[in-house]
View 1 (cartoon, rainbow, N blue to C red):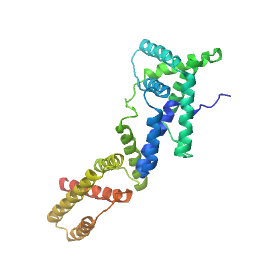
View 2: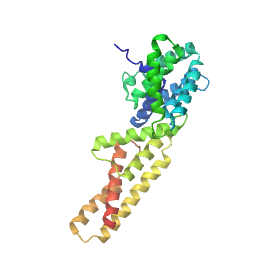
View 3: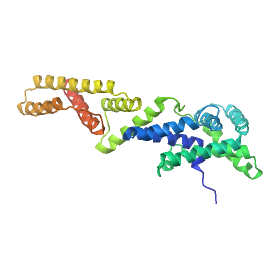
View 4: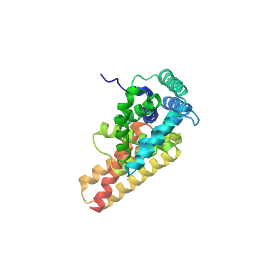
Length: 284
């Protein structure tokens, strides 16, 4: 029976899980957890460490795309040389230290169960890196098989994404995705482009800690929606609709907020949706 892949020691998987933990913590408003996780990631994936070196090699194999088999084969050859050149004992100690700190400081029983896309490819690449370093005769068949798989992977066209850990955009883009999924699931409908922008601005304000600009954006959204309501009311001849729109106007006008949280964002999503409907009615 094949031995299960050790996700905790897969440099690509553990990196993605740390990144997702930061993003979800920001989305949920748990700034302390996001800060702790970010500290762990930056501490252990620092340039010069064996863990960082393996991550860079792993990431290159995951993200690189080539068109010829000969080039893919050469890349595998260079990757093998690099993998063999690592200090495997130091790498093992660094991974153990990372796992220990995750268990102690994050203390989340669901941490290692977070979904990671392309899991099978990640597992194959990490296993190949490990087998290259061991070079045991018993691993030769698997090495040949996995080299073929990774070679095919390198020749498969994919959407290129930069996952360099020191860029805030990585956390932001994943946070936007998580937040969008959260609101879609909660309110049962896909967000329009303006609502998606609202969530994006919200996430960026959370990650930067600066809500000043976002507050201005919310005020602009409220005022511009009120203007659209006024225009609609002036051009509408239906008394029943005018009566209803006046109630809506009062609600939007009276909507004040001292703090920004998910409930406030949910209300502004409704405001944004209303504004879009009014604009469409004008152009319809």
